[in-house]
Image (cartoon, rainbow over all chains, first blue to last red):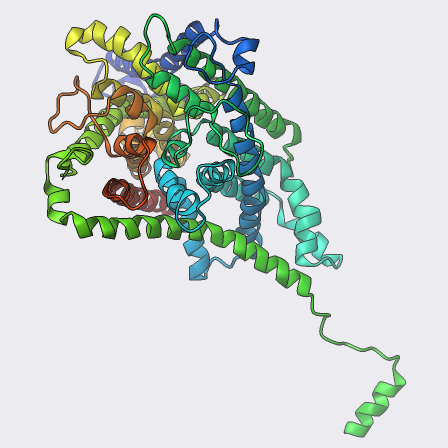
Length: 303
Length: 314
């Protein structure tokens, strides 16, 4: 696009202003834009540097294998790490079937002139923008207390986060399914396959990379969510690993939040623990994102 | 006629055309898919039902007038007071600061990426913005409390800045919504037809003039939508504010002092052990309802705006 500015630059006499001042203004604007972008990138850099310098000393094997403790030197993240793994497992088992099924329905079956299908679409758009803490309230009212009365257990945490990130999977799934060209479906139908056989054997296999990317992005959003878990009453001090869906648990962001909000002093300084926890969380996140990018590049199909 | 038709049929090899074998399996599968799709609708219904039920009970005990117009928010004190305005004010001060930060940074980044950056630069910068969007908000909270307030804000404004303050939370929330604002505005500006730019260059416009007077106004509805969506994210943001802004409601606008927002109240109160059905429990839902209604209005507004600009250019 920058080529346009150079090739179509008007002759100087066409404007009643010297070219030099115009160029200076243009350059100034360009620099201001770069400054804006630079500031955002700089903040990210400083943030990463701050977390790394604060936490790198504590991020070692003992940190991974120790449980929560009031003694800052003894404390570790094992319980929270396993809690997060369990909750993410529940979350994935919930969002993959439900998200993909919804995406298939909306792309392959739904007649979007019908009001109820449009309602589903607008509804999903809206859900994607509902504050995460409101999902916590939903989980609190329906899953933890109220009708289901599960208590703040692995299943309740996983489902609450699942509902929160479901729109991400649905939207990514729809895009992946839409990218499969109609000719594939028509070819399959012409050979006598039913609609579902076409979807199951042709459309979904072709859409898997896109769907998988969406699922990973959804999980990487869920793994860092703190607010909904706080609202459903996830305990902060758990000195054991969860052993089932109905087991009490804590999660990495909750543990980090607890370390941040504990009053720190010279004897017990919890902030390095928080930074080490954040580092671990960021490493997991970067790995997940790297897998998503790799999947996208490796299996992306050009039709 | 009938007889001759039969005779004709007899002469031909027998072809029996029946309606296709009914495929019940297909129907069952479609039913299951509809069921999955309805989960998203049920989620919204569930959110509204859970909020409305407890909120109605809340207003059975507290008058709506006291709630909406009261300026004293002390629901955990004895006797409690339920004037919601201080935490609504806190919410809008923090998210207002956030939007003030995100307007120049987000729009600047969007204009640069859409109009100025070469494809290779764009390819490097977009993932960095996505990374910024992917950092969990608790990390930003930690950064605001342990670095931004003590090192930057105290460095600039001195000790009048308290360790928990609204300004730090607001600025960091602003950085948090930069990716949202930047990516939607960039989409809007990229959707402006190339012919408009070429026409403006043809009339002798400079790059700056074309960008600011042609592309920017043409993409304005998308840009406004991105800002409203950013504001709605800022209003709903919990962790940064919970960690960095303190948890004391303030009926005033001193950004160097602690502030409480609606989300902070919900988070901080739910963290403690509260019994189901108590007035404090209902208060969480009443505040949640207020938050939900405010963000819903913003989101609907923003979705309509995005639709509008789509209709123009597709």
